[in-house]
Length: 374
Image (cartoon, rainbow, N blue to C red; front, side, top):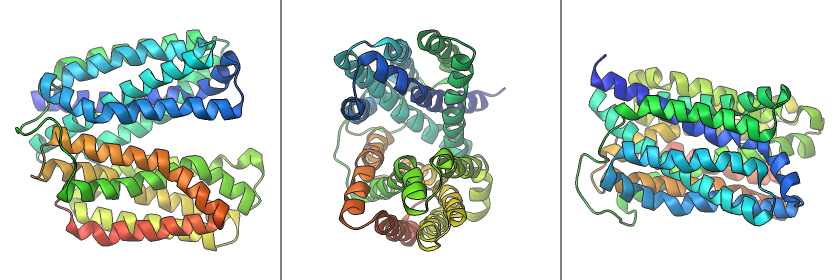
């Protein structure tokens, strides 16, 4: 197999590992809450540490990649990831849990930046669209992580034993991928740090909106179904499942679609599709329409972010080791701050109004698609 092909496989493995590791934490949350002896309010505060660790690490990760290369940063980030995940299962105090989540989030944030820099370079070398497939493997990992944890816990394994099995799998996957990860982190020079500007800031703003829509699905899809459409609590998870399924399918097929239609058309279509999805969910007063709308949101959002990362690799304002952390930081802000903003709008007006605001923002993404260099 040619070196380029091996690099593509290694890039896919790292994307899978990132999604797998992040999602493996989700089934641990109830155990961590009980072991640390905290209530829901305390848990909410502690969970902020995961996002804080990621946000703080993102710009530093770009500098580390430029200095040491993608391979060393992925390996160096996988070590604390594998060390902290088992500790999260047994943390006995809120302080220990918060510290573990901060390190866990920092490791994930560093891997996130590094894998996208690697993906930009590998895609550019290949001369064909590959970014959607890379992000599709992240989505597959996000499904596989909780599934593996559920199987292990259901078979009677303790949370610690289950996480040790998961981290052993992550360690093995990184060991397989490492030899073919890039030993450098940029194909161009430039500053180690720089504030986003020009087209990089524009791409980051679009990324913020796309991640905001994804965050809304994570935090508010079930709430809308139960509180606005009256769905039984037992079935409310169908909303996010529908969104996640269509997003994963969209990403796994996105590269072929992009080669036929083009990147700009993907962003235009994706923004319109997601906007229509939120409009259907909000304006048609039956829960079946909400599920259909969520499916449209998943299809629409699936390939916007991969195209934006490709665009970040083709702009010439900033090198990718600076541009990628910048747009990733803005994207993470959409996930972390956005759902809270939706809550404020819902409190001031209604959740339906908040979803309609997302419709407008996503329509703006579609209108901006023709400005991208992809």
